Image (tube, rainbow, N blue to C red; front, side, top):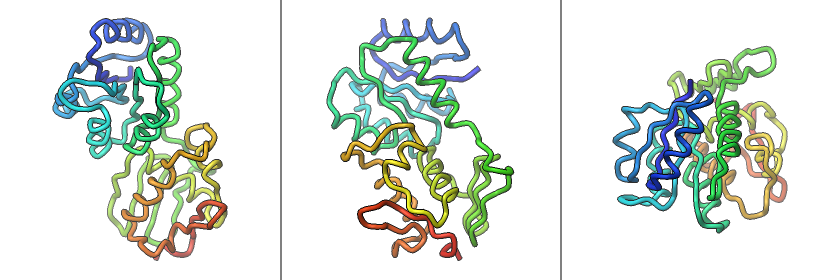
Length: 228
């Protein structure tokens, strides 16, 4: 049974989603205000978060950013606005998927299942850790160690690092990265990959971009020999 934290102020929609998902493998806890989401998170300990953008108390984008800072659980954003800016902004704040209202329950269920599959540990090749100098990625445990210290990454950061490391020494375009991570194509505007790369560089002391190189006009390259 997966635990869902549904942050949604529309009572009717919240009841519909709760009733529908409870018939499958999801247990839903509802939070009606944005400013209560962070406080309730620790009590609910959700496996996945469904987050409305237009919330009383605190804007959904702010809630998304705050939650991403403390959890790697997948975040699916709901919005009534058909504006690509919202989608790009949400992904930049750490969301993993985006769904427009009105929400079809069976579509929401399919998206949640897909996110949980992506978040599940996926062993790489023979299941052995990926080791590059002081960096160790253990896919079977979904863990990262840097210079002997466990490194806590968001779900998006971890997936991006694993995809890059699994293709060490190869240039991966934004399109290739998005397809491997989220099974979508690069639309020329999505900045989530660039933002993710910037966060990884900060985490791993890569101000000179030697560990994760930018290959102008092509994409990014994980250097297998630059991790000390």
